[in-house]
Image 1: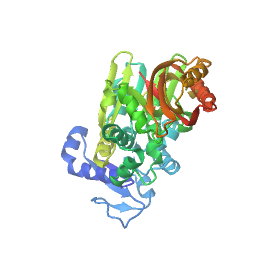
Image 2: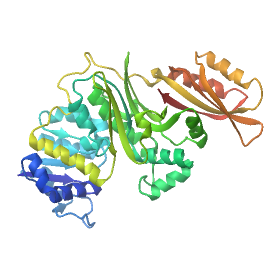
Image 3: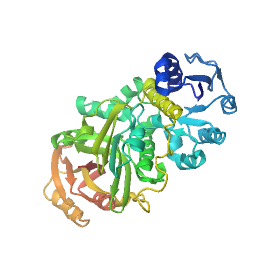
Image 4: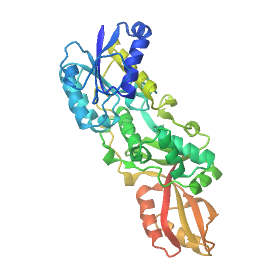
Length: 421
């Protein structure tokens, strides 16, 4: 018999406890051993958790219990869970965590501490989608060329509503909050930070990149308007908040931002609260992983899959490799060296010579226009000018935007979005 302790019996923790009890027979058949939850730890003992397990508010009741084989960490946060997981590993207990923030900041330290003690984390990225297992095991024969992921259901739900129903950002944010998809403070989701944590985990498995969220380009969906949505539709694009990891000649690009992608791509068709991750390997080509990215049962499914893998003895190196990847190692490409296509939106005077002035400034940075659209403005003397560029460097587009803002014919801020082709 394998005994489990759960640190944090909230929505996911309660689902883990209940699934292990209710599906005990099928889980035992697949694991080869009976798995039971011996103990759970919570902050507030007065709150009903809907579980049939002993509860306490002291983590040491699990960490110091010699009978507990596997610790499931579902506490949330970074530094306190790090100390708890470190202690569990040092005492020889296997650990399963769903804590993406913990891994975004401490995955390499934890890998070192864990050594041969299992530390599994399938539920940390894209909920119930088995993307970690696919990358650690299923794609081991491949150099990973790129990863593109819709890794946050809240933002995908909001963008789907904005695109399909014409909803405005503020309206759909309130609806997402009312439905429980977005928190009262939605910054972690809509600002792209949640997705960045998940991207960093996947990038470590694919490329061995040791980066923190502060090291990479992160932008949210807060500034997307119906004007941008209309342009995207007219030119055959969908707008998605994507986490992107891409191997290029001189390093690896890591970035999270709203992205215009072709309506014909598989990932463009993923709507609502669902998540999806596209992984391109040099031998297998593109593979696609789709499913529920959050929710108690979906996330608990991934947690229990890790528990079963540990019981079976199927665990390996935490990040999936025993020595450095890609020869001497790939470096994180500075964000100013990213190269892609861009979309720009600006408010300009409705008069001749304006477009010529703009293109003249862009030419100074070797930026050329690929397509253009003009939309009316509520002020009859102005128009909204929308255009896309051919491929250029991030540093150049940023420098060009600074110069363009100084032109007398341009008003307010210039909005920019990246395009992936």
